[in-house]
Length: 40
Image (cartoon, rainbow, N blue to C red):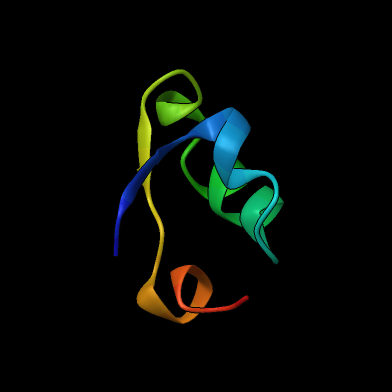
């Protein structure tokens, strides 16, 4: 996947779950699975 900031990640499906799963990364880059990055 690509690295996106938490605020950018929020636009992706289930991004809220990713952020909740890694709250310590809230202000850092969050790794987004390819399944999300490939969605249009």
